[in-house]
Length: 267
Image 1 (tube, rainbow, N blue to C red):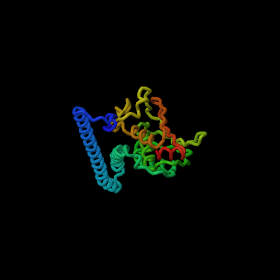
Image 2 (image 1 turned 90 degrees about the vertical axis):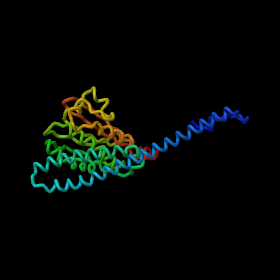
Image 3 (image 1 turned 180 degrees about the horizontal axis):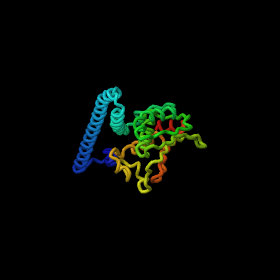
Image 4 (image 1 turned 180 degrees about the vertical axis):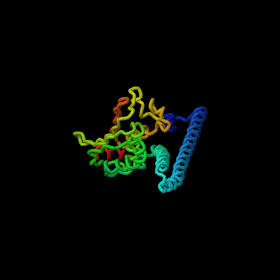
């Protein structure tokens, strides 16, 4: 409550009861503000500790990756690389989850190549794809958009890893781009995997929702699509999905035009 607005408009002297009343209200508001400030400070400290912990864990992970790369046993090497990748992706997800609330202070406008960004993320999933025998059919990715490189890479990473996770072994994932009549760039990621049930489809972007298929996947946290959707909305990117069980899923990203993105970032 705003104390000043709560005070009587009349210039007459307040009664003793009114004086006590407004003093109590003012003290309550003061304590409330102090408590709120403490919560903000504690939350900020918790976030800093979590980010620091993640960066500390990345140090031994980097050392592990170097040791894995030096192995001569290719079978063991591939298995360890896949487990390493899973840990890496989970840490990456958690780091972006923490930073999502302050994305407005953690982005930079720049021209981003859809081809380079997508190919880089595909390369990072290479070991996992080789294990499952998954290939990529890539077409018409020569498009550029004005966006934030880091967060856009994260969004594409979530959709690609989701496609790999739920694709059938020895199948292909199609990745292609197009433009609509207004000039909006669309990026499509299409798999021919397990698909999503129609009952689950409206809830796949909900926090921690794993769905019918996800319950049978021990690696599913239900956070990837939730984070991708929230990050995308803050960048003016729209995510669409079409899916059919046992047929496959198509995720598409619709990027804002340059002037639309500038307006979003200047709010």
